[in-house]
Amino acid sequence: MKTAQLQYGSGKWMVDNIPNNFPTEKAQLVLVFGSGELVTQLSLFNDVKSKFPQADIVSCSTAGEILHNEVYDDSAVVTAIYFEKAWVKSVSVEINKNVNSFETGKSLMNLLNQDDLVSVLVISEGSFVNGSDLVAGFNELNTNNIPVTGGLAGDAARFAKTQVGLNTVAKEGTVVAIGFYGTNLVIGHSSFGGWDEFGKERVITKSTKNVLYEIDGKKALDLYKEYLGPYVDELPGSALLFPISLRTNDVDKNLVRTILNVNEQDGSMIFAGNMPEGSKLRLMKVNFEKVINGSSIAATNTSLMHKDQQADLAILISCVGRKLILQDRTSEEVQAAQEVFGNHTAITGFYSYGELSPFNPGSNCELHNQTMTITTFTEL
Image 1: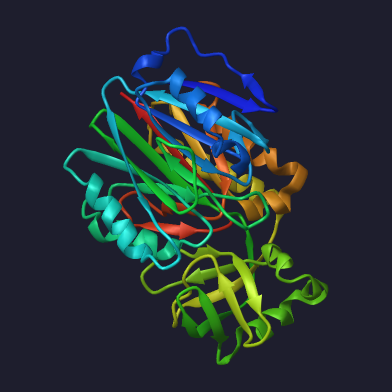
Image 2: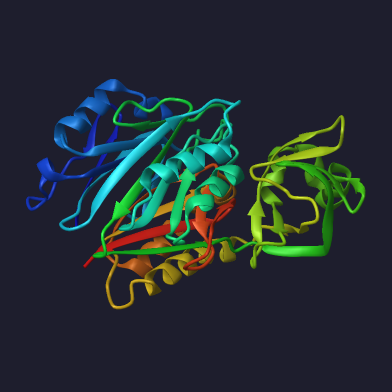
């Protein structure tokens, strides 16, 4: 397995050094993570295609792109991948707000399913897809419990529109799934947050998918506001500082859910993922050192799945909420991961509107928020 990494920005290639031993004509997959303005440019797509003519090109807009141990804005990070033994298959579907996200995930998994499938990487539009339902669709047909990981595209901190592309310029309403095949491919995965929980555990008593109406029989927003103190006047933006820890009946670990918006009229809260009735929840608050250390824990857990082998490639997908909170310390969580992997591992990734990963090897994929999610690849 070989990789080549480039970076485009300010109208030019900022990094354009392809290793001499990288077979550009044989690369099977190219990942392009960048600003919406760049990944929708036909000229950039054509340039990447000319460099790696046989590869599937998968691109998405981000809330920040990752290269090596740094985080960038307003650029495009390009990672070309050549597998010597493994092979890949990339598929996509177009959706809109009225399309069933569960059936979308199910359809994509059906297109990839075969005996030698070892991993699926999902790059989804992030503006209107229901991430929980999308994941449930993949899980429905994932009878072998192969790792399904990935993330929802971002749009900086604008939350207006996201773009994803497969072998074309990125556009709104696209969901891409990449299947990786072959027994010589070792996949690692982990997801970790690092937030502190506080307050008593409460029960969701009324909800519809990702809209939460009542907690312990009280209006959800009223109860949430009691905890915010001086931050209450800054809603919904201040909600990024206080996400929710969610424990559902069918998950053995707590999920983190980000609040996207609030409805003052009916006292409801809109989340990035489903909030099932009967689930338990607690409020969370930021601990900067623990959030940054969470990235190191995710990298360590992922590395353990490779045993004595160093990862050839690590894809880091972190939440836009972490970036908005960490601000000028954002690169520290990427550097924490890089210190675990070392210089042998090529690192790419992006800041997302939702992260996809199982909790443990052999378990179903889950939608996460406010986590650092890492997927690693090594070819034996």
